[in-house]
Length: 343
Image (cartoon, rainbow, N blue to C red):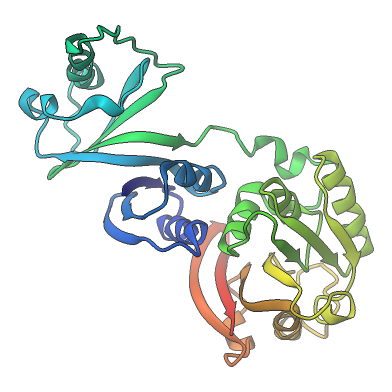
């Protein structure tokens, strides 16, 4: 089966990696990439793909690819097997050609309407833009037209209630929920996984992990941060195991090979207690410590400033680099994403 995904325009590269992480350990074949869209081939069911999309941070939509057309002629539209459509339905269109044809969606709904009119059972072809049972999405390019069945579409403001300023325990370095969700997904954490954030701060990653069904553990060198995490997790009614501890000596508080995933946003070394001689020593010792408590072949997702060369500080015999990229944030701050797999 083939699926069409619309990726976030903020960083399509990150969105595609998140998609790969969501599918993991299932495999897919990348069929095509254009604009902010990708077409994948996968054996996963529509229900499973919808579930994966719902937990994403950087996806805009997911759809089942029904067919491809060469044109929008009535003849081609009339040959499409519209049996997948359930009433009431609606039609949406994304025109990447820039032609901006007038009344496009209404015109595309015509052949579907006619299909139901001509059916022997005489089902009334109702349209509902607010609560359709099926949304038929057309993605129109200069070469092909993709007819799809929408499985999931992002809703506006879904992270709004968990923005840093909404939390009872606030800190200027608090990670926004969207990026926290992204890190959890990049770590390949699945429902029921024990996920560790060894620099948990006020708990943004822990909250997103818990919402996704993980079993989060938060560790921080600063007791005030642990207190903040406790307030915030309680406020959002999620559970997390919280401990004051040293991220460079994790075996003192956690058993070896006991953690399924690590997602974290370590200190930047600016006006913060880091619990190490300097920031480079902190990162180097943390990655060595993380290797001991993480299960074999599992993943670490790191977010850190580009002023730090995390790759140089890691032991390449212990870690395999899966993915890396940068994302401009604001001013002089560019953040790096690094995904490592324990060898």
